[in-house]
Length: 346
Image 1: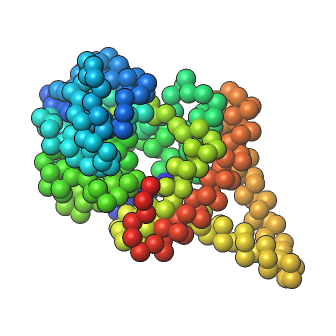
Image 2: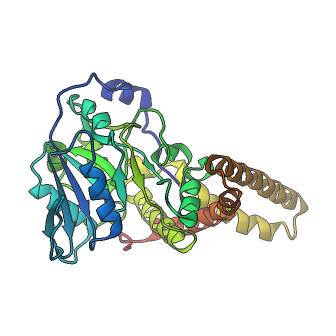
């Protein structure tokens, strides 16, 4: 369900840097956050930005309507009821920094966020830098279950590093919840594509890579990203991801037509077809039961890992059914996106 590393990974890493380059002078950064309205999460993000040990040049917040009292810690722009991609383009057009740092309004940076990213800016082949979005430790039970579900290998696969810090690497697709883009590269590809949401970040990264730019995953550039609570909010988000990735698998094969994205759909189809066939064909019945048993062991392993990591038996127990529901939901909606003639709307 997650993104993978690009083909020819070793070549990409050699080009864009397996290791971060030596520390260099600070590069101007404009932080851009978009939202429909002011929320407690947005205030939390602005407070965290104000506490950064190396502050940005500016912070720009784009809302449907500017609050009457403004935002003391940021420059606020009113956009009207337009989509997030259009808001990000609007914020980028008003920004003055050499780098544009995009954050979701429900994410806030760790203190060393900019220091970890800044050394990469000195490498002219690097066009973007992304970092992990870790579940905040103070999130409630239902959000923690969502976070541990995303952090499990059986759900996120090779892209687990999006949710927990992994090793530094070259990537070709990264979400805009924590993505810094060189202004010149952003302008060269025309910014975000407002036809897509979610997925506008996948399209942006694809155009950057098509233009020869490199994208680096930097584990030290960490933000804390609040999760949608299970089950309703979590599965709604999973459905959006599945529909858009399914559509992208057809129209943008370079970064989206990868086997791991098809696995939940293949598993769903196998469950349906094999369950029906096993009624009449005994050998299929045993293969079907064996596959379900192996899957159950994998889910149980992820649940135990979540229990140990969180220190909560309740979280571990809740992760197991959430993984199963996530796979089935994503698989179904991926198939729907795969056959859609137009981009799905969220």
